[in-house]
Image (cartoon, rainbow, N blue to C red; front, side, top):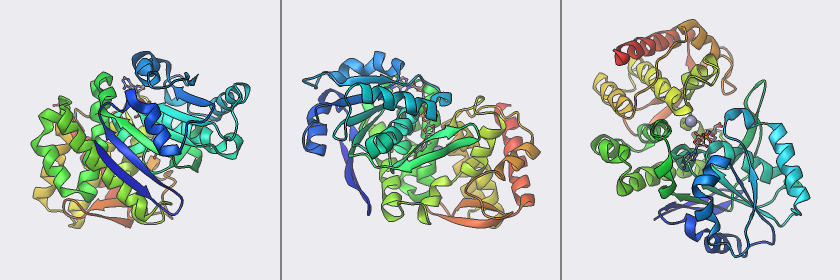
Length: 366
Ligand SMILES: NC(=O)c1ccc[n+]([C@@H]2O[C@H](COP(=O)([O-])OP(=O)(O)OC[C@H]3O[C@@H](n4cnc5c(N)ncnc54)[C@H](O)[C@@H]3O)[C@@H](O)[C@H]2O)c1
Ligand SMILES: [Zn+2]
């Protein structure tokens, strides 16, 4: 098992990643929060509960109150927050209650936000069940929901008391979800962990086969990378921005395709291809490095077909809430395992990068 510490001005706690955590959750939570409160809520989705609910419940002397959030991004909204907090109030929830967010990133984001606002904030723990949630969304304290006007526009920083990433639950994760989540690990390696890049190159087969040791190595390193960044820059005033590598174009792709055609990690995969092209043009990576990193991205694919037009994608990057002025902000790798944020990417540069990406999408699909 890997134990990674979050240590920021507002929170100090551990992230545990390993096997067998789910079946022993109650005593582990007790150790993390002191003692189990009278009311414990579990927020999950019906699908996850059907697969893993029994395992989660087995270590609790008294069964937790189960709250359900249906799967899908369209339920990550304020209406769900209202419904869930009302259910908690009716079930006797109080300021000392504990919430367990048990699911993918959507359950984690909604659960964290519900915990942030119910009774002005109650303690919660994350038990992430997707690859993406284990390496990314459960780490760092960002919580929130979507508005019709855009994704993640309402939210709060609210750290959990602990994170328990049980890698065993990934056994039932669809292959496409696994591969999409792995793009965040590819990202982690490229921006800050050269050894992770090498490991993912050399052990792609075992990782994709979900070999326990290989998964633990990749997930542990990915969490460690994000935790180290969050520990230095909790509120994203500087360093934390590097986590957005591949996300400027990635978000634009998701937006241009209505969040339906592709998974987040798949969009980030293509976004990284565009960013690598930009980095190559600016000379922060060599041609050989670009080739090597692109190959790594495709190794964890396949990435989906891209139907959006270049103009539409470029236009969609203008709406990114992380932009300043007319220029686009980009995270560019600096060799392999380091990165920098640049603020002055012109529309012409961006267009060239998007065209390159679209051309590669055509070729990759052959
Ligand atoms: N807070 C953050 O810092 C942060 C960071 C990145 C992403 N996010 C958010 O995370 C969300 C995406 O999360 P996600 O990719 O985990 O998607 P998700 O939560 O929609 O889960 C994907 C699908 O997998 C299913 N599933 C989950 N665990 C499973 C398991 N063990 N076995 C079988 N099926 C399982 C779910 O029911 C769902 O259908 C987005 O809303 C995004 O905005 C947040
Ligand atoms: Zn992401």
